[in-house]
Structure formats: structure tokens, C-alpha cells
Image (cartoon, rainbow, N blue to C red; front, side, top):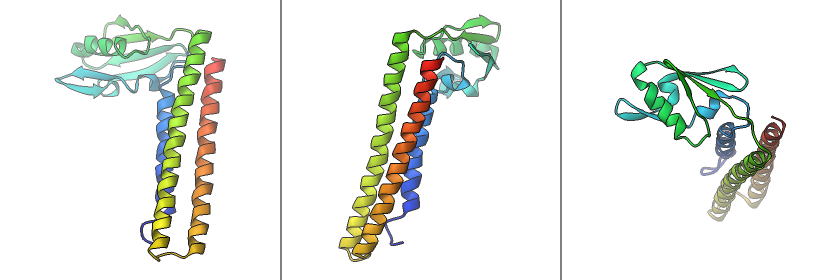
Length: 186
């Protein structure tokens, strides 16, 4: 392959877009308890901000409850405050160093709102995949213009880039459909 164009690099960038979508969707609450729900929470302890997972153990003892076992007793109130301020709609119940987070049931309106948010995340991911495609196509045009690849190589590689793009757009749609189904059935 000519310098400046590598299909594996493009695929890696597209995969990163898909992985980012999966992370964003894992944070969407579906009414079912999940430890990933608390992944975005940052706690201010020891004079700095840290992910919740670095100051406590997060587990799911029951389908509708998340349990947060804070390691250091002095950090319990900071963890509770971070969870309350996270806009996840969770109200921790303190029990010593253990915080219990009951997951409220979802209303029909909230489900529609979550589906809409999931669609927005998916669209951002598709745009990202298409931007990678555009960059790959631009790279091919430059290589052909500079005489580093022939017109036939350009056409063949363009088709490969398009196939890769179609594959990742379909994967985004599949991930979205799965999440949408999960939101509607819980």
C-alpha cells in the first residue's frame, strides 16, 4: 500500500467511533441496575477528582439496586455528593461505608426520551465514521494526484473504504437497535 493510506488505520478509527458509542450507551439508564451507569461519575477526594471506581467498589447485588462500597470512611460523603449531583436521578441510601442506589422504574415519557438520546449518540457515531471515510478518500485523491497510485488502485481502494464504512454504519445501527430494545422492554 502506498504511503499515506492504510485501510487498517481507517478501520481502527471507525472501530474507535463504535467503541465510544457503546460506552455512551452503557451510561444510559434503562431501569436495570448496571455498574456502568456510574462510570462517568467523578469524585473530589484527596484534593483531586477521581473516577468513582478508584475510591469504591461498585456492584449489583439485585436487579434494581447498585451497591457502592467506599473504601475510606472519610470519603463516604464526597461519594454520596458526587452521585447526587451526577444528574442520573439516583438517591443514595447510606449504611455506614456502603451506599445503596435503588433504580427507579422508567416512565413511558422517560423511555421515549432515552431512545431519542440513544439516536443522537448513534448519529454522532455515524458522522464520525463518515468523517474517517472522507479523510480516507481525500488521502487516496492526493496519492493519485501525486502519481503514487494509479487510477485503478484509487478506484479499488475507494471501494474498500466504502465497504468498510457501510460495515461500520450497519454495526452502529445494530448497537442502537439493541439498546432501543433494551430501553423499551425493561
